[in-house]
Image 1 (spheres, one colour):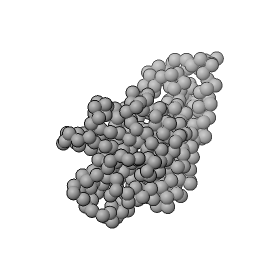
Image 2: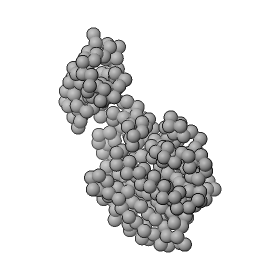
Image 3: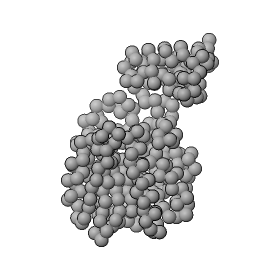
Image 4: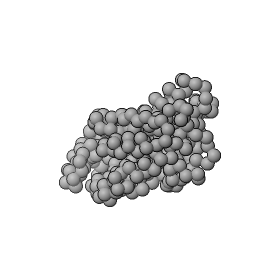
Length: 300
């Protein structure tokens, strides 16, 4: 027989608490709401609504998957991120709340560049994953992209991740407005003959290999390729930095998401680059170093 929402939430909460979920009540509410085809605020306002028996089996499967540690975003198939609905599955990392700071920083940089001069702004996201960041940027500057004031490129080493990015771009009305390329960092297959970049954005893997191998929580279900940043977590970031002199135009800016303990290694790597460079670090809401802004001086 059908079941009322409040009872379903109570039972699911007990099940998930017993399985060790760090947020059993929230998880239960999200999954029950999803079974109704509604959002969590609707569920909280309609605790006496009944779920048909035909949907109970599906809900039970979702609860079992969450009890096994699978992320809610993979079970529901989307993540609400920066006021966007980003499709998510095992092809790419789930967008994190802290990564919103990277996207917001990129929007600020692009807006400032467009206001400063009339030149075409070339922006590229390396390691786009689900395409969440480039989707946010593309929506904010859609008119500028259509008018060829901004050229947007996004690349990833994973062809599967690029498929997901393409789907997210299309679902937000950005199909054909962003160039997608498959390749490792700056390899020629990814960038082709493009001119030097004005803005580079990258959220590369920055967990240490040991952290990625531990596969704790949701990490057990997410692609290892998108998590493992090498022995100290900065291997890919340092490789990217080494190529900035050849890829970033004078006056250009690179925005990199980093781990909380990686500020000094990044500063050290940038100080070794030829030419004049500056690094500023922006902290996230927890006060932890999160976004490194690496800028190249004009004339260098």
